[in-house]
Amino acid sequence: MSATVQDIILLLGDSLTQGASAPYGFAQQLSYVYNRKLDVLNRGLSGYNTTWALPVFEQCVAKRSDRAGLPTIRLLIIWFGANDGTLPGTLQHVPLPLFTENLTKMIHLVSSPSSDYHSPETKIILLTPPPVNTHQRAADLATRTPPRPVDRDFNVTVQYAEAVRALGKKEGVPVVDVHTRLWEGCGKEEKNLTKYLRDGLHVNEEAYRLIFEDIMATIKEYYPELDHEKLEMVFPHYADINHENVAAAVQKKAIF
Image 1 (cartoon, one colour):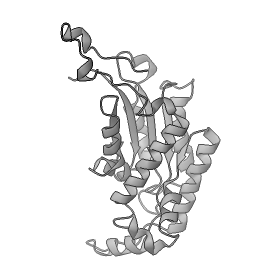
Image 2 (tube, rainbow, N blue to C red):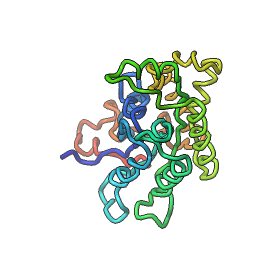
Image 3 (spheres, rainbow, N blue to C red):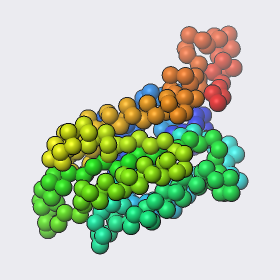
């Protein structure tokens, strides 16, 4: 069993978050820049919506009574909406009011002093779902066996992105507006979203690069104490090791 040596950045979301562990994804990039400072834990759940993810989230966060000796979640990044915003009648659909309610519960789980999971050290960032390219999505679903009808609508996804922005404002939680970033980047033309989407739904390498940039900018602006350039390493640089007492020199350091 591995001992606890570093605190955590926890990623919670659907397949867009799960896929962020790819070599070009923002999870991989976060792991690189926070190497030796914070561990990045990806809890992206492909296919999940907020209703299904909420009870999983409760299993991923330790209660206050069970937290002794465990790493602290210093940053929580939540990214949902791509599945919640499927068309009514589909398996993954979550009505907009319930979507907002579920996200609020996730935030309050760690931010509310009355919660058993309250963690005042945990900072939160929300991400809006990306725009959907129904042309790409229709072409992809048509190749399935059997072929499937289009399960998403561009304007519906807009509503879920707006719900995330509104919730962030209400709760005082910063939002990385993926939807606006990609929509403006493609010239506000749905067919041009092939620039950022692999199949009309999942983002590609270029989109992950932009998302990573925006996450880092958001950290610098709202949570500068978590800026990777300002954090010290948990274990010292090799040049700083006292070779006469190595064991004492390389004891982990509390960086918060």
